[in-house]
Image 1 (spheres, rainbow, N blue to C red):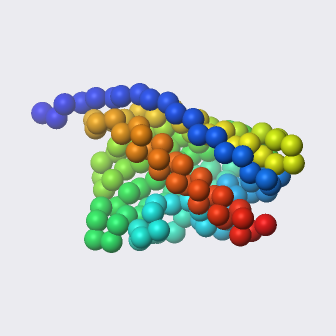
Image 2 (spheres, rainbow, N blue to C red):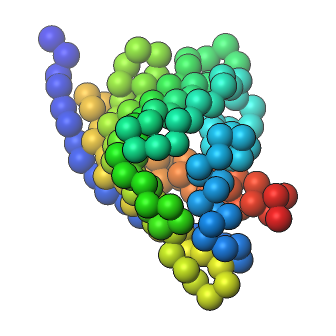
Length: 154
């Protein structure tokens, strides 16, 4: 029998952008804009990013290394306050194996003429080793992509 486990963890990532909150928020709420920065590494094959941006709306994407296992992201928006906050409950699967379930909260705070983005993830690693540092590095890489996408858009 497989040993079952659930290991909790929490991390926070912060970034400051010289762009207004409404424009940073739009990078999350607009499906075309979000598809420019949200996903796996550049070399991964990707499926369509789906986004129904409303409370109760779903978001999903899949991708993976060429010839490798598919990574599936699927979530539901639990709370949205325009230009201020997004709360998303989501899971990550590799193939058919659910690795993690998370609650991610993204806050958009005014910072002079720019925006301070504060992302806090409460994560549960399921039946697998805890890879918190890898998850945090992946989130930071997404925010690097967000910085580049916002720079191109403005």
